Length: 156
Image (cartoon, rainbow, N blue to C red):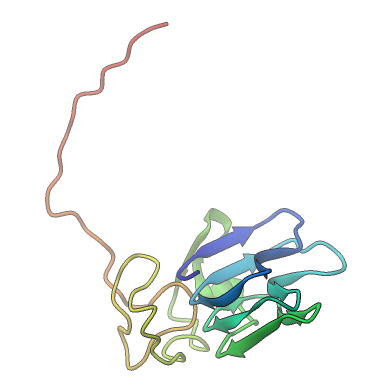
């Protein structure tokens, strides 16, 4: 599971959960949970003893529980201290990085399994990849041509 942007503003307990799974890699995801449910609330978690894999270079505002109920998850380079001002517009779900996100820009190591970002842009743009789903500084896609089609609306 890679390059996902997830923002939730309703009560919740976890955004990415690996349960009874093995050999997984959860890498370069960005998760913001804005209204965590009281009690057991995590950005990501692995659960049960037959779950084994790696959480690598994910960006979230909550902890990652890598060994719940005997799971054998490993942690590699995640940042669990995401701040709302690190993103373009949290309210609309735009979790692309802004320059203020210095704690995660150029702070990951290359992973052969994740050579691009959320938008399909190559990693890295800077010296090394960024933590999370977006690679800061990548050029947004701009179409070079437009096609206009007629809109036909049929009444009831």
